[in-house]
Amino acid sequence: MTRLLAAAATAALLSAGPAFAQNKIQIGCTATSDCASAMLAIDEGIFKKHGIEAEMVLIGINSNIPAAILSNSIQIGGPTSTVFLQAADGGLDLVAVGGASVMSPVTNNNVAAFVRNGITINEPKDFVGKKVGAPGLGAFLHVLFVKWLVEKGVDPRKVNFVEVTFPTMMDIVKSGSVDAVLTGEPFVTRMTNAGLGTVGARYAAELGRTEPIIFYAASRDWANRNADTIKKFRAAIAEAAPIVNNDREKVSVSISKFTKQPIELVKATPPNRSEPVLKPEQLAWWIDIMSSQKMLQSKLDLDKLILK
Amino acid sequence: MIPDRFKGLVFPAAALAALEIWARSVDLHSDSLAPPSAIAAAFGLAISDGAFLSATRDTLASAFAGLIIGGAIGLAFGIALGVFQVFDRLMEVTVEAVRPIPSIALLPIALIALGFGYRMEIAIIAFACVWPILILSRAAVQEVEPRLMEVARALRLSPADRVRKIIIPAALPRIFVAFRLAAGIALIVAVTVEIAINPIGLGAAIMAAQQGLQPDLMLAYLVWIGVIGYGLNAGLNLAQRHLFGRAALVGDPA
Image (cartoon, rainbow over all chains, first blue to last red; front, side):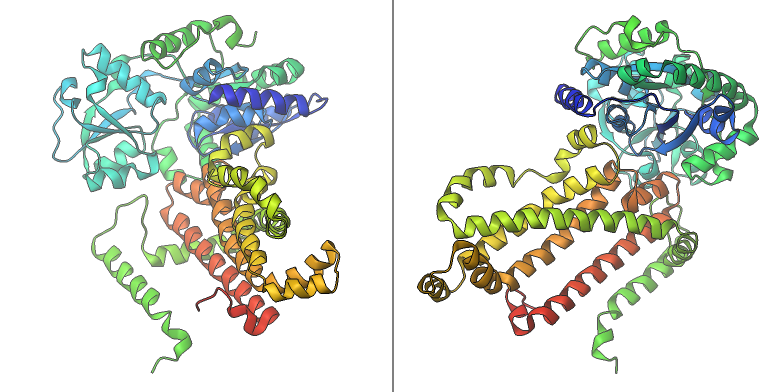
């Protein structure tokens, strides 16, 4: 399917006619805190200071971001590492242009396998035979959980995974349709406070990784034609990232504005750590675990995946 | 006694009251459900800040544009297939092979080729609207009273005049029923495209409200879509009766 999309994308690009360097860019992200550096750079006028006019576009499902980039609906997007690598593996000519969020000790603690009442998980092998809801199969939290199961000597094929989106998790756990969900904050706290169950495993904290969750990506063609804009974009993100990591008040306002989540809810959870620099070895870890989970078919060239 | 025209409102009103009582009695903790009073409050708030109206405009503009484009294509092909039997047989396999493709299945390709926005949504709605209009207008044309066709032959009308003066007037009430059916499909497909992919309109607003953990606002949009659908159907019904009088009863059991 992705190969078909790649062919369609090429056709679309060829029919687009001569393109010009642009100063107004649209940045597409899902309703999470991962692109907080871009949200804040807009709200605090950091992009403007660097000579870029930018706006955020709310994308419902992360896996739509590569197609949105290639259709030039957005010029820069925030795909998760897994979505980006699968798109690149499928032949879409995307390139990472900067870092957005990374796993960190604080935010790894926010990730949990939340288990409903009536189910007891004492050790990883207790997940065998259970129905576990993941926000997306092959998506970030699912891949991490499978990696954790493998490290703990549990065969992930013996766990039944189903897709459950974040906003429906609370009701699905309450109804008992799944035994556990792979989730993060604020959902863990909300479900705990509602008395729906307990945290079964803090698998991200146990893995203790620091690789990227989401990074900024563009089409290679657009990035090559807009080298100057990318340079300014990187400078603005580098300026915004420390504010994201240190000023909870400011960043919460920006996140709430973009995601439309109530400000109290946003303030209750620390945003994912912002890291503007993306290193090839960080992607190498993702490529390794995705290959071992048979999610990638081709051999990806690390040198080409990140724009120099 | 309740006047007849209000009888249809009894069930929704009772259901809303029951929902409100239930929601208050169970201390509802949900990211998907909200009591009707909260939905009404969210409705009032959203309508006052203009977001409701711009989302409605986006959805309706796409739905109507898709309906007009798809309707025109479906009507032209439907009449052509109905009039020329050879053409009908020639196209049979093609039409029956392409027709079952769910319009939503075209989303990934449409997104890459057309990008976010009206263009993609209109193209998908048009694709969905072509088929009911094509099939029903073909049937309508084929069922035109044979004696009318004999008259056309006796008058030696040209093919264009036959379509213009005999076939379209005779088949119009049925074609309008097809148009009504397609209008409902257009609205459904518009909202579905917006929920799945396109960040404009009422569907995207539903998704944004859901992801913003505002079930009251999400359900307010849902109720509003129901109201729009009801209004659209009522408007088209009225137009049908007004335009075609007794002939409007064709194909309409109501």
